[in-house]
Image (cartoon, rainbow, N blue to C red; front, side, top):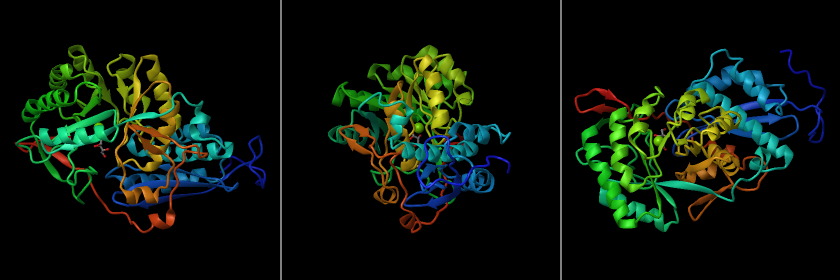
Length: 421
Ligand code: GCO
Ligand code: MG
């Protein structure tokens, strides 16, 4: 490798032009309830950083990409050159974009930002440009087996201080609906070694969901933000119909109402409804949402740190979105590790066009493996003041939870046709 040739390492942190090198990088896979892929990058100055590369149900693909194709390129590089390393991994691979590549790049990128902020002695938000707000509004997940149960669950979230709540309900006549947990607290879709088969019926869903929001507004009034995730199940026209029917209940957003591979599909939805639209948790780059944003076809972009190449690329998406008055709404399901959550909170604290942050609580086992300094307070999350992104990994504890293969479910129509889960 002919880049870079650094002088010998310095005994003290050198923030100027002196040398600094990446001396090692390791992937740590752990399953404290569900699988997480973490990259730890070490430097010759004793400072290390960690990044998340988890892809639910396809974890090992990212592990292999990191171990076989990225780590060998990192050793000896100057970790302070975050942008150059990002470009090197993105352009340099020739094969661009995609969920595996962009997660692997994200893991590196976040670990490098962690290192840089630790060296600067700053919480990450300060390095990004400082606070734009004091605290980060989050939405929690209320889900129930039917409308009555979901209404009770929303009440529970309100009593816990949440200002914004996502409401999902089981659908009469459908055995399993997206977002409904078995144990009432932690919804975790990746369950079996083989994908669970679920059945979907659009008519039953469209008949029932507007009744849920009618009941919720009737019971709790209009003071709280309510959100709903359609999880890619509708056609554009059906999504337009649902958006229209939900207008009287003034939702904060309707999420992923139709698959967005074809960004133009949102134009039809947009023409028919004023219900705010959110999309983006499965996007990996600005190119996946460029048309949606510049044509103002959405209101919230939900792409987050781990899926979109880390902070370096996510802030580029956010800046682009700000031109079109599109705000952020980062994905924050439990399959994103606390490392992504902690980093997202620093991003949220800084980003001028912040909208909202999704927040599903991790299990106590996961929280113990990833000690962190962010905390929930009265409907808001607050990132800490520790230099870096404020999340660490307890490697000894992580080693006690070996990888356990699990897959996301699939959905079929009642006649057996494979549908979008
Ligand atoms: C959300 C998401 C999740 C995804 C999950 C897949 O809005 O939080 O839709 O529930 O289904 O992240 O791994
Ligand atoms: Mg979603």
